[in-house]
Amino acid sequence: LAVHLWIHNNKVIISRFIMLVVVFYAVYYIVLSICFTAFRLEMLDGLAPFDFKTNPSWINPNYLVLLISLEITYFVCGLLFVLIVEEWVWDYAITVTAIHIIITSAVMSEFPLMPHWWTALGTVKILK
Image (cartoon, rainbow, N blue to C red):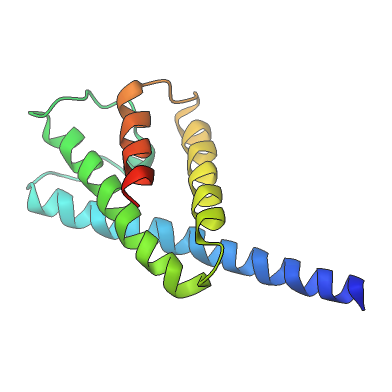
């Protein structure tokens, strides 16, 4: 009985986690598309959510779109995560963020060491 319960709980946790990762990236790409349209920019490429090499400048519209998209995505996903999992939201949110960092590193072929990227990521976590 204990093993069955443990397996069931793990399946629930993994299925919720997968759902939250899909929600996170769906929201991210939707927000990115809206921001690129609002700023009248062409989408950089499908890798925009992972781009930490864009020059951080308040006059660089590509940087602003990436920053605004990240902030809005985390805010919206924070609300959606509460609706989806109802409990342990911080555990899931931190795990999704860790997965995002891992995927970002893999896609860009290097670990993000740019302070502006970490500041934006950290600011979002504090605001939530």
